[in-house]
Amino acid sequence: MTKTAFAFDLGNGYVKAMNSKREVIAPSMIARESAVGSSSIFNILKHSSNKGYEVFESQLDDTTKYVWGEGIMEAVAPESLIATYTHNDRYTQKRFKLLCTFILAELASDFTDEELLDVVVVTGLPSQEIGTEDERKFKEFLQQKHVVTRNGEQRMINVTDVRIVEQPLGTLLKLYMNNKGQFHEELLTSTLTLLDFGAGTTIMDTFKNFKRLPEKSETFYEGMNDLHRTIAKELEKQHNIKGLDPAYVDEGFRRGDCIAEVSDRKKYAFEGIAKRVIEDFVDKCLAEVDRTLTNRDSVDKFIITGGGVNIVKDYFLEAFKEANITVIQDSQRANLEGFYKLASLLSQ
Ligand SMILES: Nc1ncnc2c1ncn2[C@@H]1O[C@H](COP(=O)(O)OP(=O)(O)OP(=O)(O)O)[C@@H](O)[C@H]1O
Ligand SMILES: [Mg+2]
Image: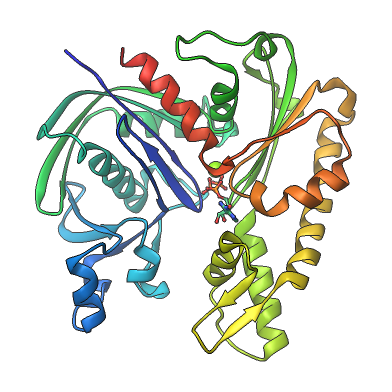
């Protein structure tokens, strides 16, 4: 029987997911279908073409239809978005589980089979949760037959094999494992410190010979979302406005113009503020890094990954002053690529 390989990286900010045919990057937010405006012509038009979200029903909650997809932030008002990521008992929360089943259904939708019989899933958790009760609960939940309806079509996804690894390990697998599952020398012999700049967390993990060294690893519960929020607050003060959604700041960074574009008439440039806020964040982060490592000399190589690399990279390199540092390109997808490599090997 052929196995199907799925991988996903479910972060505070974004879901990154992949099968053999496609990759999905979408916010870690869901909404009730009823929260999508249905009367305006705008929404009617959007419905007919590329609307940016799909409609899901899950056996976890068979009374409600939900929507999720890359365009969900545009389709649903901010107050109706349901964030799925909490630091608190995440794996037993319904909204977190719902999102997991939607990811599985989205990945399954690329296959013609109504039922996928033998699915291998590789995913990650924040490193300090590996080996805990949380990991066990997450794995137990994933490894079962999921029944989910996507856009009216029922999908059955029988997950038979679940592997959960430290999130930043995905980046190492991408860099140091080939498609035959062989590892590069460097992964086995060197001490490698990764910094993963995420939306809600900044994770520092040090690995040697595949093992994470806990005394040289640390999770900081601050990330790019906090930067976006701080910048939005500063803009509110500067322009005497209220309720500026940090999502506009996120978009401004992504476009690269550093402008919070609320509407055609209301655009707020934040390059100056961003510089200050980024420097503060990186300085604080480096202080933590040095406190945890005590001595940087024991580390052979530093690697920076996670979507936040796009934001902090320039100042980080300037302030960190280490020559042996690898900056991951396309950093938001790096962990996912490693997870998928592993899933693909396991499915052969
Ligand atoms: N090209 C880009 N330009 C600017 N910002 C980006 C870019 N790509 C990603 N980001 C931002 O980087 C941040 C981190 O993204 P990432 O997907 O790594 O976080 P996450 O995995 O969801 O969060 P966490 O690791 O904390 O759970 C997000 O706020 C995202 O908007
Ligand atoms: Mg992440």
